[in-house]
Amino acid sequence: MLGLAITTMEDKKIQKYELGYLLAKEEDIQIVMKHLADHGAEIGIKGDLVHIALSYPIKKHDKAHFGWIRFTMPAENAPTLTNALRLDKQIIRTLLIAEPFEKQNRPESESRSKARKAPIEQAPTKEMSNEALEEQLATLQG
Image 1 (spheres, rainbow, N blue to C red):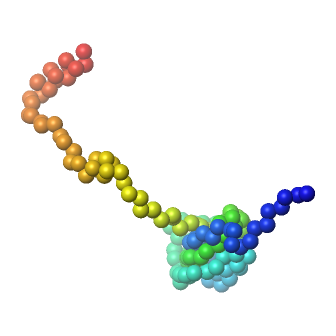
Image 2: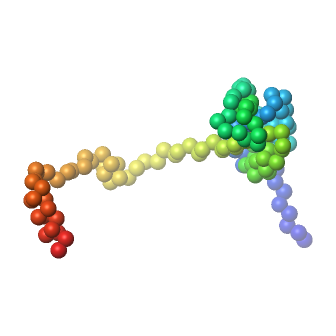
Image 3: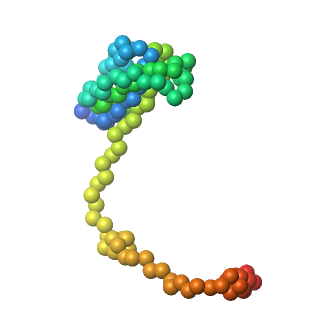
């Protein structure tokens, strides 16, 4: 008997993402939205498209429409979404980033916290002439 694993939507790890994109035409936003829908993304916040001049030509374009979208999606779909967006000829460039994990508040050990708060002691310095300094360096070198 084959042991098949059945995964439900509850079993999948849902991750928060932000997608930045450059489009040649304003109406190409529908293509981006279709790719997101095809990969199970649930749209959260969508930024306005802004027409910008590019610093350097990208795929022979010197101007583009820049936008961003925040959404959630199963983490396992991220590589295929990235690939689909990269291969689409109507999309100039995309950048998909995952929301960073939140730091957990862990109590620090007393020794670590004391070490961080302790002031650094510096050795007292005294002024030396160049000749005295060179002499001291010569004795240290051998």
